[in-house]
Length: 404
Image (cartoon, rainbow, N blue to C red):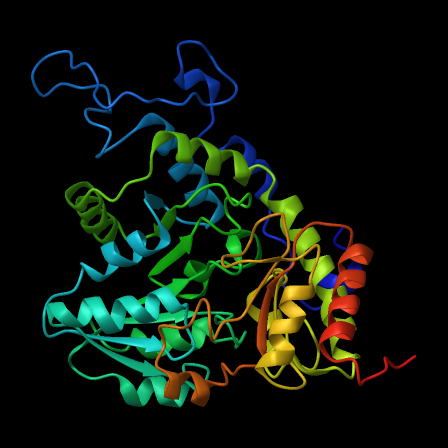
């Protein structure tokens, strides 16, 4: 599925990825039944041999056998020593931010998931945390923003929804010159298959596993991977103390989703590249934002720090809000819905939907305009997706004719 043209110039695939996804943490020998598929352990509590003497599990909030299988597998895929699972991506964010104290400052990349923006602005600020939004694609801006109060730098790459690519290693080099400052990377768009932030110098790699890591739009979950033992113990205490953990059934579903992650991501990349090239050639489209295109301003950086591109594309349709709305309403295979990373193709309007919580002036300054559309390209046959896009574009912007 992933042909040579797709992957040319990117980092080579991470060795043994599919094998680790299938086998790490899944050993049948850990179960009396020798089950090949890890069972769903629904028990909330576990028998102890004597007071304080348990067999690795005592209460499901602080540890569960099914969740343990998932966490071990994800740690391996991230090239990490440890992984912790949470009830959602924002629950993972909440736990990371609880590493800080009142008076501390967070530097967050300016183009970021709307829920992260909302949490930093409207919730974390109420607990004495200050957030500064910076264009982290410009390393000099990040460097200038760090102060004695800075304790956490939060980046996404590619960013949501403008698909800007940030130099993870460059950020890490700057951040780690300041003692006690952590670099966290939201790796949701890329998944563990295409990018390993920890190997590029990040302290924390987190996901909304709701998206590509699970990949089936039927689980809400967050994941956090780290290498530092002290950081892990601090986050483990927060996981136990705050209690924002996923159910065993959700852990089972996400663990199952990992088994096809490598296959899915290859197809997402293939379909997205074909669609991005089509959109770029269409006169009804003003501009395409996809880091797998040579026209993307950070295309070379994308190749240097990743093994490929996910299925996320943003583009500006010609016209105004009416044209964008007509396009979205006329889609047939693409579903008009928030979220991303599932096997099905989705399309949405960031300014009205996912990023409505971002102040309007800042949305406009960033370029999250009324004509911006974000798409999550699924696993359908590419020719069917292209046909759907073509008919919706014709309906939305009928005055233009497609070039031959």
